[in-house]
Amino acid sequence: MKIASAEFLKGIIGTDVILTDGVPEIAFVGRSNVGKSSVINSLVNRKDLVKTSNRPGKTTEINFFGINGKKCYFVDLPGYGYAKRSPKEKESIEKLILWYLMYSGVTPLKVVIILDSKAGLTDFDAEMIRVLREQGHPYLIVANKVDKLNQKELSAQTRAIKEAAHEAVVHPYSATTATLKERDALLRVIFDEA
Ligand SMILES: Nc1nc2c(ncn2[C@@H]2O[C@H](COP(=O)(O)OP(=O)(O)OP(=O)(O)O)[C@@H](O)[C@H]2O)c(=O)[nH]1
Ligand SMILES: [Mg+2]
Image 1 (cartoon, rainbow, N blue to C red):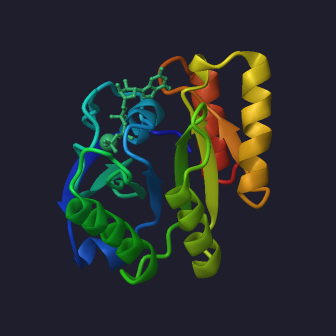
Image 2: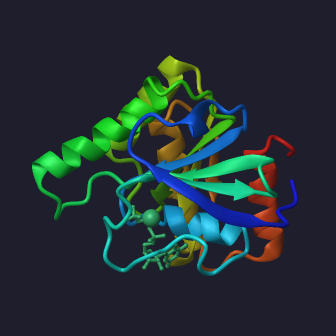
């Protein structure tokens, strides 16, 4: 899919008509600070569509972006596992994500789990995969920030992530250094055009 336009539509924290309006959704989930918002910006080729931050934990709503009008939505979910949040805040974010995936009524076209390729799979990522498998939602792992790894580290990490993730598709990526060709390759995988 070629992305010609992308615009912020709305942020939600509970049930909303946008969830069931028939527009296919690509959801982006992952630990705080792994680069979810940066990956979305890279995919739509915009620097600032989604706010990114050195201070993690900024996104607390489920944010919807319209792609090519309303051909599909990119959905940026709040990041989990941010250490500086209170236990109560952490719990409410995890609940919101699980609600979106399990009870909101969505049938996402694809759920993109974003990891920091250096850190690998965290406990809540594994929980996420368990839920996605249980719900039957198609998913894909993007191992982001590969610019921080050398070739040897990269292949070891990709293998380790794949093993820990039931042999899921693991796509190495860098939102910071991706070329247009690399970006298009990721889009093809997300939209099953590969
Ligand atoms: N080196 C490197 N840094 C990256 C990459 N992608 C994102 N970053 C940086 O990582 C930090 C967090 O990026 P965000 O896109 O805000 O992360 P997020 O997952 O949306 O974070 P939350 O919204 O807090 O959950 C920023 O400082 C980005 O510049 C990457 O591919 N390589
Ligand atoms: Mg973000």
